[in-house]
Amino acid sequence: MPKPEGFDFWRTTLNGARYVVAPMVDQSELAWRLLSRRHGAHLCYTPMLHAQVFVRDANYRKENLYNETNAEDRPLVVQFCANDPEVFVQACLLAQDYCNAIDLNLGCPQMIAKRGHYGAFLQDKWDLLHKMLSEAHKRISVPITCKIRVFPEVSKTVQYAKMLEKAGCQLLTVHGRTKEQKGPLTGIADWEHIKAVRNEVNIPVFANGNIQYLTDVDRCLRETDVQGVMSAEGNLHNPALFEGRKPPVWEMAEEYLDIVSQYPCPLSFVRAHLFKLWHHTLQVYHELREELAKVKTVDAIVEVNRELKRRCQDEISNLKESEARENHLPLPHWICQPYVRPGPKDINSQNGEHPTGGKSTGKRALEEEDGNLEFLSKNKQKKKARNPKKNFDTSVKPKYVKCEQCGNPKGTKCIFNLCRGCCKKKAFKELADCVGHGLLFKTKLEKRLKWKLMEEGIRENGDRKHECLDS
Image (cartoon, rainbow, N blue to C red):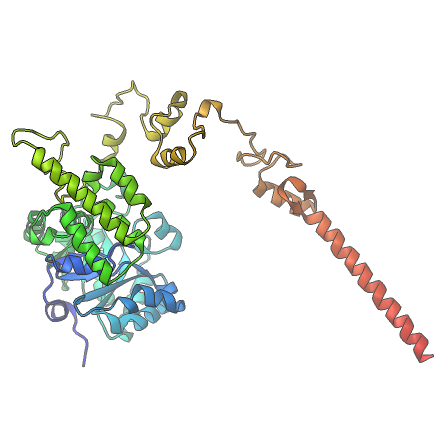
């Protein structure tokens, strides 16, 4: 039986999915997918998996896919990052029986993707991508899809999408940001790129970007004419987004923790989800942030959630209708709502001007200015709590002598006055020792030569004995 393609695949296999939960590293695990499905999501993606590791490591396959199968968790798309056609195909063959489609990640803009040469950093390698998709399309039994970011030019984005379609892509998710739009430079996703792609290709298109409320979903579907809308951060802050509900944060946490008790996942995943869900509330109850960071079990996290619920309910009962909260949020902090990432101007300045007379007020500058301890980073505050005698005052910190070659701190006992890296190169080149860095190239060479001479002496003595015996 031939596998479904294009719109037939979307209508039959994916059941015409319109509300989609994005692939999120360490965040779209089975428990979170089930929670999202129970609150309106039609389709979910696994976290991004590394194709090469998936092929070579059986435990990685079990932990990230094989042990996470559930009848409620369908339709499901498995996402891989890859940069080698054969490795990608082999990974697909190992995963195809556990999902409804396989997605190639061409949208990750993070530095790890740049170093690993995958994600959005493959968007200029059209020949490689064509080969990867065409090979997979021919050899695997489920459809291949792609998730991409846009180019600055609409025309190039459209050409890119058409090339992927021609290579065998059966559904395309378009994130309306370039690969440079991330972190404080995230900005607004451009739906015009998505609309242009939708008008030019003959396969289903999902839109990604700017989705914070259900009204955004409806507006995106209307303005771009796409088949579905994908949400990542909006879903993390409100799993009931696709229902149009804004529940209390403890309600979603309770339900999620109940699912985790049935389908366990690493505690780091759970903690990360709750930091997102409780983001605004933890700005009010700082001590609960510390509690959540310290707990070691799911049961302990359940207790933190109970305490958060109690405090919020006490606050609600004591809050008069006439009181206006000065938290600059559209809703009370205990309600699930999106987090709007500040832009670069909001971080260090207001209206383009620095409030401190042109000086940067960034965290590092505040820490270092006159040894100011009031503005320590969270990591340094934790270190200070563990060791109250620790001094972070930069004015009394020891000044390190720099390496003569690279500028890094030099070893205090280095005979060459270099850092360890430069010293190792120099000592190896000159066959010298540096006791300060524990480098013994000269000593080891002398020992090898001495041992060689001893071996030759032993061999000569043995030959003499044989000669004597023969005579």
